[in-house]
Length: 431
Image 1: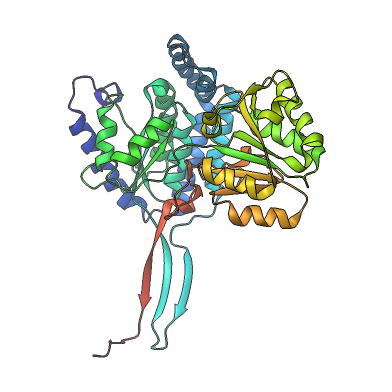
Image 2 (image 1 turned 45 degrees about the horizontal axis):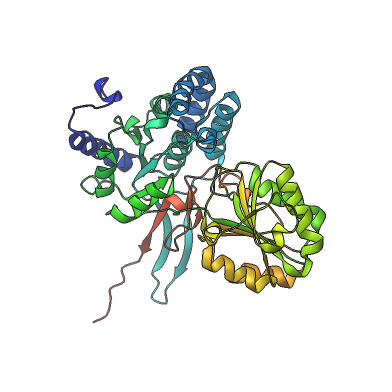
């Protein structure tokens, strides 16, 4: 990438720039498809070292983004997603190392069998090719997405939001250094050099067929645009409207801290619980401590009539609240008549992202997990665990709620496809 390209393109021809990116990415993907696992791991280890070595520079770049975001009046949840400090940079470096330590998926045999005629057939993992990632205020996505794509043998075109431009450039420079030191094509991980929104439109068109998959990370409007306009396959979720259902069979001493963690640990992530459902059969014993704990933790509670009777600080919930992803210190609480009504509520208002049940009854848990049609269904734990890193994937590019190819956290394996390799000994097919 030339020096002029590393700055905002301004009056330059965005279409020309983006198509050049695509061509370079396609060439890099062809080379990466057969790259040795050792070379990819060396690149990732070098990138992690560079992240640690330039941590102060990355934080300084992030301060510029944070200052601009505050000046623009961005909400606290947005600022939390955008902010980097030494601890978060170290977490990025550790995630890159964790990805390097994963088994390399490329070339692994998924299944193998032999036909009666002697043909031996294998289904083998292969890279997807070129992956376009469009994201907004999370600069850590630059490291996670680039590392995951590289590990899976894919080239990545990263288009971060203008709000995180300084941070993303500093992080991308570390990934580029890792590629150079491993003697892999630097075009394997490219950051779109312009903040012009036209670049997103070009990516959604597929860059002359060079982009194989688009993965968006961001708000509802971004995801909706990508899903509507993309001419290539998309891995995405529109929103994370997550539920936690507290069953009459729950251990209330465990349930209260789980609910508070599910809502309040980080309110601006897609795995944050937005609606708590409490079984009417136990609401007198369960509802009060849950509501009190959330209010005491600084959360605004909006509830149905039964919930409002618990505490005068509870605000009335509207119909809109049941379908709102707050991404803030706000939660809606509703009492339901058992697990079936909870399941029905989730089916009506949920986003098929992540939903949890808290219960000590195995039968109730099985009914919930079998009937709730979400990408991630949890039992007796916090929805905040909806994360590829917590699943042992090293990191994730995002959560996919569709049912084709990838579902749930999109990690290394989900960034591969497969092909069939058929070996014969001279067989011909009869007429």
